[in-house]
Length: 414
Ligand SMILES: Cc1cc2nc3c(=O)[nH]c(=O)nc-3n(C[C@H](O)[C@H](O)[C@H](O)COP(=O)(O)OP(=O)(O)OC[C@H]3O[C@@H](n4cnc5c(N)ncnc54)[C@H](O)[C@@H]3O)c2cc1C
Image 1 (tube, helix red, strand yellow):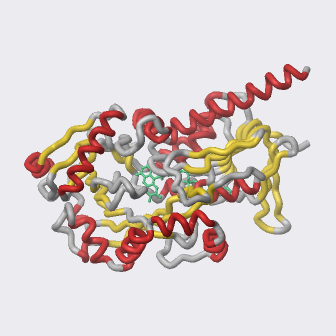
Image 2 (image 1 turned 135 degrees about the vertical axis):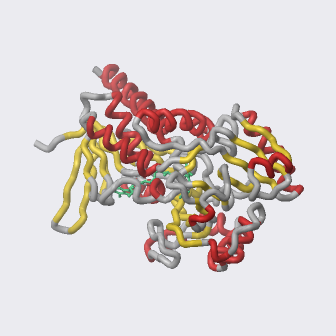
């Protein structure tokens, strides 16, 4: 007889691994299988990000994003301390470079206070003292921002999951999902190589493929994943100490992404980026990667046209700067004038899985969908790496609630 797992989790990014690990800790006697299509963990968003443990500056008070991020800072820092994973608490400065940005800085400062964050407003002179290579009219200093390698965090969570009894199947792409009445997960790599796994409950954390997985499961949703590339450069080694903090611009509140920033990485290097340009292949990291299936899916989705029209001007500017290094450089020179075009060395891009609704709304918060025996993470935008431990905990709570309801329904029938 086929083995029936208590839980199957799909996705070896930080959200899936955190969920599998916490499910196993809460349910030591249950059988849990984690499936990932690549040969290792963190091959997509989790392994292509800025490595920042965000403090929660930007998020609407009361949103899941704000709540998870705040809890995530403490949870991630504690996890890293417990497992000897290096974390550097370098803090972050959000630098205003124009009177309009100063105005926005004050609004953002108030939001930080509403979110209960430890922040400080500093003036031009103090900025010069703290960051001699940065120019600006003032800044918000956020002391709780840190840096880490999320690949390392994810690998450690996976190791603890396996040590606690969990099973992992790498190189296993899920190609079919259905409930009959348990969950059946099919992996058909080749015609003659079809494997299927049965589970009593399924959790799907598939990032850039989230919409395809809900469709496979037959769940009706109103969103589609649109990929936005985030392109980085790395500065030469001589600039490893150019900044003491992470340096971010004051974001435009109408735009969904944070703007090109200077990020100290945990390996000692400094990156510049990411920008936000249209991706033409969900998991294609090269500049000219293209997938006919991904593009056709996008072009046939009304939300893509609406969101692209809404952000047309920004989109065109970002695309121009993506191809024209001097334009990209201007975004950094605003606050760090000494960097030159020749200092922008190649660095791998990341691709954001952005859920967009049919009416063109960019989904800013976390989004979930469910069926009787499955839960799908449909949108896990930045700072989901920071927030992965509380998100995993939230998913475990939701599953417990769903299973409790099912048990009481069965008891009532009996
Ligand atoms: C450029 C960039 C910068 C960012 N910077 C930060 C930051 O500094 N701090 C922060 O907190 N967040 C940051 N984020 C956000 C963060 O990285 C993501 O929100 C987070 O990694 C999402 O994790 P995930 O597990 O949901 O997705 P992913 O890491 O994308 O994992 C999904 C996994 O599912 C697997 N999968 C998909 N389909 C299938 C299938 N059919 N079968 C089996 N497996 C499948 C994929 O192979 C993948 O491994 C950034 C994101 C980007 C793109």
